[in-house]
Length: 105
Image (cartoon, rainbow, N blue to C red; front, side, top):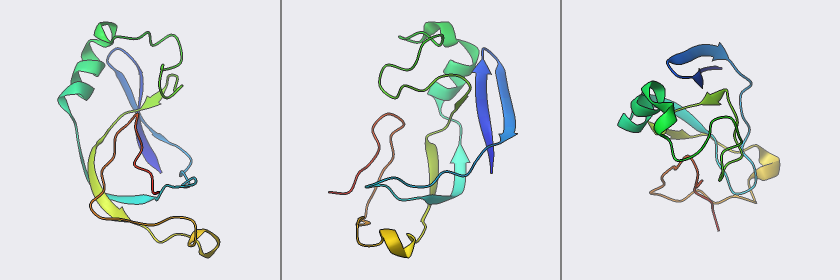
């Protein structure tokens, strides 16, 4: 799949990346629409203003550069593979947060 990956100040590249698979308590979404949030734009132009260093792993997620940005999107939950259907419950409504994934009970 293609993703916009942030490498540093004003360096965003569209690249081919492996398609993710959901972990325990997660679902996979087929994105329908995506947008750019003001925080993404600020991050792109002024990464030095962030409250953490881009030279070290993110304090919550452990992510390092290059990083896939984006949290303003909508989509449809895809069916789980048969071997996973008994482990995850899809509830509505749902939301996403880049550092706080929505998890099923």
